[in-house]
Length: 139
Image 1: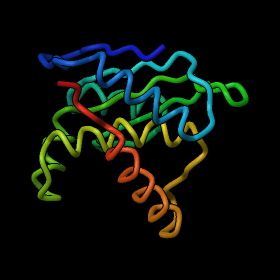
Image 2: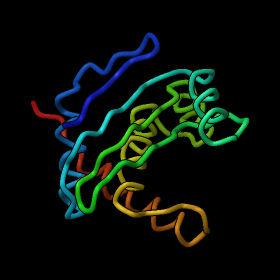
Image 3: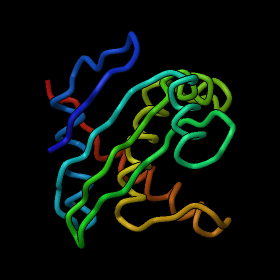
């Protein structure tokens, strides 16, 4: 089950569409959907998570904690809405596109994709682009 949690003044207007899309991303990687919690927060909230659990003293757009068991994906994905907004400006894309990229990024980590080396990062970006194209708004 995909769930969305809010630690700031931000609300997804179409949670069902995002949930369905993330489910499709998971199944497209031949994985099973377990419990995945997205926690939307601000910079200070994610900074505290980064310091407390990862010993990193810097802002980031996303932190994911992977509790997957075999092919069944479980985890907590913290997303700084402030960082996503800043990154959208920096990368000259819409907030919506950057937001989807970050949501897909967290799940792709659970699917086994890394982004530490240049080669891994290229594959991750390619996978993010592929998954963003899977998002369809129902009319």
